[in-house]
Length: 259
Image 1: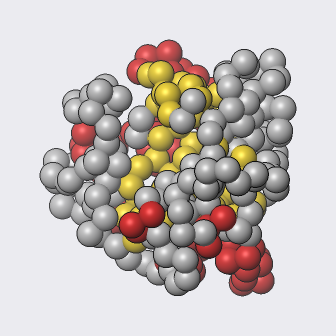
Image 2: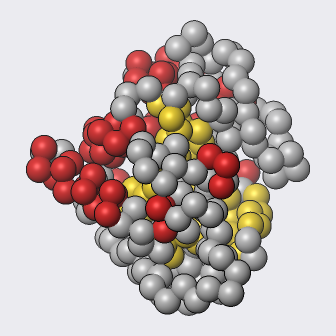
């Protein structure tokens, strides 16, 4: 990603709280990963319910194959994330979401509670959304409120009308990066097709806990093929059995390794 493109993405992140970068991976590769996600969903997919919406979820996407692991340190996406947050990062989680035809929209919320929100300065977390399918409003593209990353509250205030909500679109292989403080929510899928995506959230510095602990999912064979940067981001530099703290939700993600 050239310098001017990174500058533009960072400008949009600061101004709106989000940016969309088209064509980060080739469309055929995005659609191949979408099919691999369907296969994983058949084996280990779980129901995901949050803020009034439901979808299918596949935990720890990097463990589902090297194509997904390559997203962890993708040069284009990481260039933007590191420019904003610096190199001392943790990939808190990278899970997949499949919004099926008829799945409803999600309530607007932030990923950062009020106590941790930073109205100015480096954000605590950036979310990187890999559009394996094309994102459109009808297909349930993520809804986001521009500029809401600068509000001190994690949810829209009671009694206030939120008049300006956008649904950024992009072809398969595009990436949306947004500040985790932005009010956002999954869109309702009014189409006849599934909307498949991978959500990776990068947290600031190693003191932040994982949402999903990768050592529960990534085996020794895959660890051998990982790049050094992937091992750093997943805090697995000392091997696949390195123990890490995680704050995943009990009852939603079993504390065991998936095969």
